[in-house]
Structures are given as C-alpha cells and as structure tokens.
Amino acid sequence: MGIKTYDSTKTDRGLTLIDNDTWHSFLVDMHGNTKKKFSIGLIDLLPDGYMVGRLDSFLVKFDSNNNIIWKTKVKLDIHHIITHDEKGNIYLLSSHSHQFLGLKVRFDVINIFSPSGTLIYEWCTYDHLKIFTSIISKSAWLAHLPVSYAKSPNVDEYIKQAPEMFLSPTIRHYDNNLNFNFEFSRFTSVEVLSENSLAKKNPAFKKGNLLLCFNPYSSYGILNISSGKIEWVRYLPERTTLHSPTFTTSGTILVFQNSTDSVDWTSDDRYDSLRSVLFQKIPHKILSKKPDARLWTSITEYDPLTNNKVWEYTAMPKESMQAPQMGNAQRLTNGNTLVCITTKENGGRIFELTPDKKIVWDYSSSEINPENGKPIKLYRAKRISLETVDKIKRATHVHSEQGNK
Image (tube, rainbow, N blue to C red; front, side):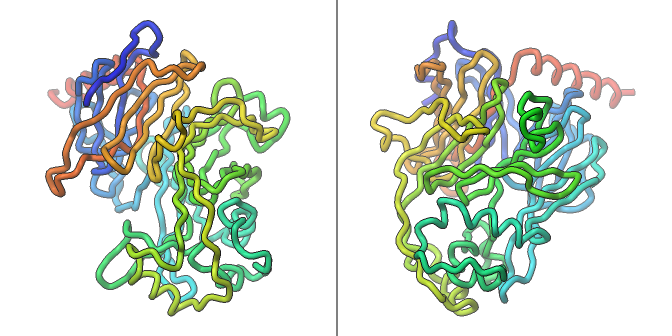
C-alpha cells in the first residue's frame, strides 16, 4: 500500500486532496505521506485561500487548521461535490424529498450560496420533472426496455410502465420505516463553465452555465441557471453510470465511466423489502429486460460538439479494472490525467497517467474504518498545486492572527 510508482520527472507535482466514504478528507504528498487530515468532507478550495466542505450535513467555511469561519443555518443533504465560481459563490448538490406516486422520493437539488454562506439560488428536478424525464428517456440506460414502452406525455404514466428504472431503492436513505428510500436521479457533479471557445459555436456553453452529470442515466448536460432550462445534453453510447464530466482547457469533456453490472431489477436480494414496497404502490405495466453489462471502467475524453471519442484509458485487459461506484478523473496542467478509482475488493487507488497512458504515479490507501473493520473507500481526488497550498497556508496564518487579537 502507499506509493507503488512515482516518476518525478513526468508527474504534475503538488499535493493530492482525497475524499473518502466516511465524509472525511486528507492531503497526501507525492511520496504518499499524509500531510493533513480534515474532519470535513467534499472539500473545495476557494480563491481567498480558505476552504468549504460538508460537516455534519452543514456547509462550512474553514481554514486548514479546521477553524470554522461560518456554517449554514440549516442542514443539507449535501452529496458528491462542492465547487465555486471566480466570484467565490459556492455550488453544491443536495436533495429534497417529495411525495410522488405514493412514495417518499428524493429529488436532486442544485444550491448556490454567496461567499458569506447565504443561499441565493435553488433548482430541483422535481420542479422540472416533465422535461427532465423527456431528456433521460432517450438515454442508453433505458434503451434495453421493450419496444412497446410507450412515450406517454403524462410523466406519471410514463414512469409507471417500469418504475424500477426511475425510482431506485437505495440503501443510502434506508430506515426501518421504509421512509425516504427512493430516488429519482443522482446527480454526481456540477461544474461552473468558464470562458471558452465553444460558446461561439453553441450558446449553451456560455460562461456561468453549469455542466451536470445525470446519473445513472448515461448522460450529462448544461443548465442555464438564468432560465432554469437544460439547454444541451450528450448521451453516452453505452449503458453506464458516470462521474465527474469536466471541461478540459482544449475544449473537450473528460468523463469517468463506471462499470455496470447486469442486474435483474426484479430480483436484487439487497433491496427485496424496498422493491416489494415499490411494486405494491406502482404495479408494473411492463417488466424490464435484464440489461447488458459493462464490466469495465474507462476514463474517456469526448468532443462535445460531435460526441466522438478523443482519448480513452482502460486497463489491459479492460475487465481487470471495475469500479461500479464512485470515482473521478482530473486533467492536470501538464496534460496528464489523475484517476481515482474504488474497487469492490479494496479501498481503491489513485494514479496519474501521461497522454500516452503510462502510469507515472500510483497511490493506494490502507486505512481501515474502525466501525466495520473494512478498508475506507476512496471517493474522489484532486491534485493541488504547490502555489495553491501556499495560499491556503497564508489564509490560515491571517485567520490565526485575527483570532489572537
């Protein structure tokens, strides 16, 4: 465990900020040494050198010594990612629960907070259900359903035809009373678009719009926060869950595509009790077929205008790298790609690839969760430049001096 490979002449040097599945984060150097631990998860680094993250379902701003600057007044079901724009506004994914088709269902929410922690914008899939259902109905995730699957203009009737394709039982929201155990979607990333050349060819790419990942529906798109409309969508050709679609400086989109098991949706032992509730509330009109499997993970770069693959990394053989959950990829400043992958067997690994797909840095974590004795799973990783690290140190120093006055 630790560092397996390190070629200092070809890596993009810095520290790596890692999130794990216990809502904690930590920093490691290029030699695999842990430099700092945080009791805060989903950390994002702000332009002023401070940080924001999730702490006990609150959004908090803090310094590198874990001193809290401010905390939101209300709890949030924050998940997957927190990010910011150049003005210091903070963007995150959360959820609202609504009664839907006789069930309590979780719907994704995009929240924007001011630099001082005030909520200034909110967008929920529940309020845009008709258009969002129309978008995801074209995805490869639903392509395996029978041809007789009717394109009903009524959202409720459309979903009732194969409810387990839309209302996923989830252990994440499980409780003994079977409340709040279904989710309609699971956005896995949000990115604020910066100035880019694509905006001249398609106004959907204008600065300030949001690139969103529509998990598990094998697609991603762009939301215009001014109009509240999803203006552009791209569909992956394969049935796959995905994480962290992100724009590169060359105008392409880099996507972490998970492996996807061939699940018989009507007989998954883990969710039997929840599925029975689902099918009691919403009887099937059509039984879905067993979907195709995609038993490998890939990091794929697409031309957003043509949807053609520009670059792709898979293991050799490709089935030897499977990550059904979590993970991300980051294009680094030197052209390399940082990959965080969680496997079924262990906590996962983080590795750095050159454009010609040579691994020049390879890190694995051996940390064990004391609550269950299992390896702590690596969720997401981000390489931080040494200049950014210095900015964090300066902000912490200033905050410490102010606190001593």
